[in-house]
Length: 262
Image 1 (cartoon, rainbow, N blue to C red):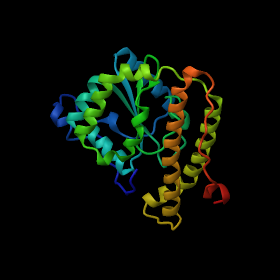
Image 2: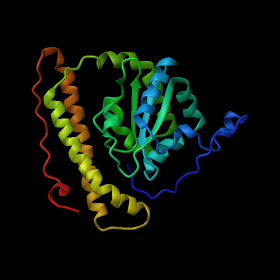
Image 3: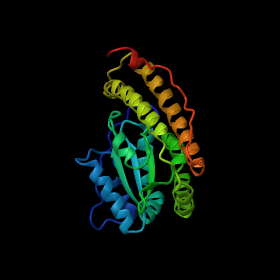
């Protein structure tokens, strides 16, 4: 996620009868971060549609203020990438606003939390299984990726997702991991709740001396937590065949928003 104040793009639907090439002179509605009335129902519908059309479901959690989220949306609007996505995926964009609490939506897709924007989740719809967990973190730097690299990423998943799905099929329900995850996610959400309103003001041009230090602290925590949870989830899967798994999790120190009041 890279800081930057970005103007909202005008989202224009493709007119009836427009050519495919001319469509990409505007913006496609499905590749836009906008509020929805019932996001969980929309997620379920996307998965059902993917299942019915023998495609994968692809969810993007992002925001219009985020440079990397906008870069990814721009790439999705390119003819090169849209051609691949429309053939193999059913895509849904989900607006996280100014770091809103979306953890229940993300967890319904098999991932603990959105740790950066954009967060890209690919779901095999028949078993509703997340299949790109090991590479999710890279999308927080989407602006540094080329469109060709993105096309290759999504085509590789299509080619290899059956193998990936088999590798992730066995995982033990680990109460220790679940409790640790929920506790740490709650801590991150508290940081988002503190940072979000300041971020919104920053985006509107109202600077606060508290913004940069808090942004950096939240960033360091969310990046480290994402890596730690990935490590623990991989250990949990690897050890599932052997019975009970005893995990040694990182103990993160107290954070500023846990020690002070706004």
